[in-house]
Amino acid sequence: MISRYAHPEMSEIFSPKQRYELWLRIELIVSEGWAEIGEIPRSALDRLRQARVDPDRIARLEERVGHDVVAFLDSLAESVGGDDARYLHRGLTSSDVLDTALALQLVAAADILLKDVDRLSSVIRRRAIEERDTLMAGRTHGIHAEPISFGFVLAGWLDELDRDRQRLVTAREDIRVGKLSGAVGTHATVEPRVEESSLKKLGLKVAPVTTQVIARDRHAAYLTTLAVLAGGLEKFATDIRHLQRTEVSEVREPFGEEQKGSSAMPHKRNPILSERVCGLARVVRGYAQTSLENQALWHERDISHSSAERIIFPDACTLLDYMLRLMADIIEGLTIDRERMRANLYRSGGVVFSQRVLLALVQKGMTRQDAYRVVQGTAISALDGGPDFKTAIGQSPEVRERLTERELAELFDPAFYLRHLDVTFERLGLEPVDAPPIPLAATKSPSPARGGAQGGGS
Image (tube, rainbow, N blue to C red):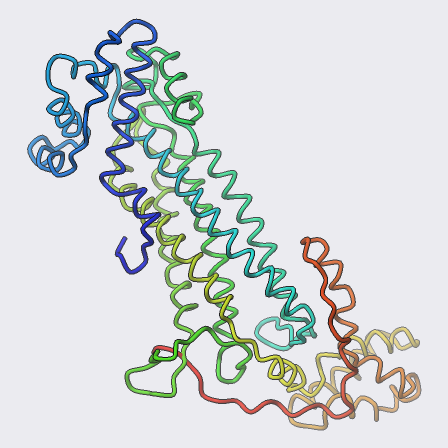
């Protein structure tokens, strides 16, 4: 992964030196297992423990032998010296080391990602509580639907992130398996008890059945989980991008004092951070597709998955780590224009209250078909530039004979739509906040807030 999207903690897990250190750890622990059952002299262990990893030397040897594990073992033999080096890699095949080390890397990566998720959840949780009663237009198909609150939107994000976290915990546990079972998995050259004791020391479970490799459904499930999580971040980012559009202008990403949005247009304040999240989510999805294709290997193993996995696992974990950190920063620094949200809610002439009027008329004895005809006609007229919906519907003869002015006014109270927010917030364990009650809608809809040019980098 390019350094632009890499944080050191995650990058270190997949660095060549760290990978070789894991390989050495596995080799030494297996040697200990052999010594415990008397197959290797204990006196050899001290010499083997003197082995040192030299990434540059391994790279030079790999150029000659064309095999990274062989080059690694040759390098270790040089550092150990003497006859004791022959006890390294006893009964193992390369994938015993490679797959077991990869499991350790992916578990460590998942631990970092879980910390990232927890930080993002904490930020969203706090802002959801802050914006619990911040009134705004709910939108379906990009069109005004009914009133909601921005806190409710954030609560939905938090709920999805909680599910993503549980999936990641499950994927971490599923990938936390190793194999030290030999060339085709039959333990012909490695005692099962050596495998069991060695993996226990490594903090891994034993894969019950393996071939030369651990079955790649585990790896596909892991990467698919990362892709689903990335897709959730893309969903959040897409909402922010829409809400930052000039015509909407309800939220704004953080924007540095010296930041430039465009090389040509000085006024631009574009949602480039959210756009970056969306772009990187596509990359992670592509890696997930590759992991799914890696499931079907020939017989007990081929090597078609290997080259791809050298890219997709380090990159997917590194990218998601970056995306989670970035999204936490975006939401932490998000500017929310509450007045603009309220103004936009009434921009459509009050039609967002149409369902309440419809249901009230039905409750008063009108057929649903007749009530729908009256309400729809008035709402469409308001959307097309006619009188605002509240005024026009109040002048309708069908409405006036069934609803009093007070009853009609109550139908346009936005607080009605937020009256059950406590239930949603309690389900998520969000503490309620003391907030002033939302006032009744004004008789005359407020004028929309004036839109201004805003963007970010072009």
